[in-house]
Amino acid sequence: QAQLVESGGGLVQAGGSLRLSCAASGRTFSSYAMGWFRQPQGKEREFVAAISWRGLRTYYADSVKGRFTISRDDAKRTMYLQMSSLKPEDTALYYCAAVESFNSGLYYTSAYEYRYWGQGTQVTVSS
Image 1 (cartoon, rainbow, N blue to C red):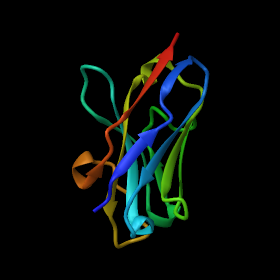
Image 2: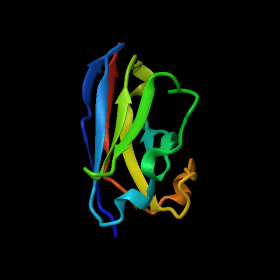
Image 3: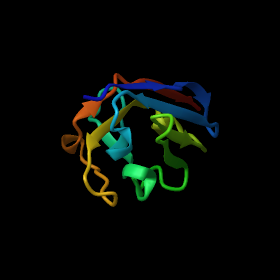
Image 4: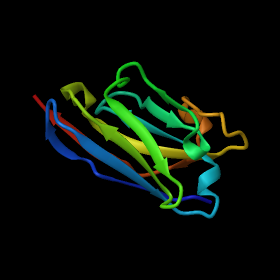
């Protein structure tokens, strides 16, 4: 069973950058498909980005495409979300999620498909 811990959130001005990290426990990290979601205050959780195991495939929400980059370092059991050109509307609690995958080409965009979740890290973008 995996445990996920996010870090790297904070307060940043519009146009700035942040890198979120998601550290995972578990011996089979390399076989997890993983993703980032966010939940603005008072709104529903939404998909941000996903990555298949070994990082062979990635997928982004339209709202972050071209500004955010998802990646993973299996040796460090860590997934990242590099966020650039941040906007006030990116303000949210960001969660990482993982699920065992048996196909290196699969990624998941629905929260219901993920089995493990972190506690979240707050990102606040000021205008």
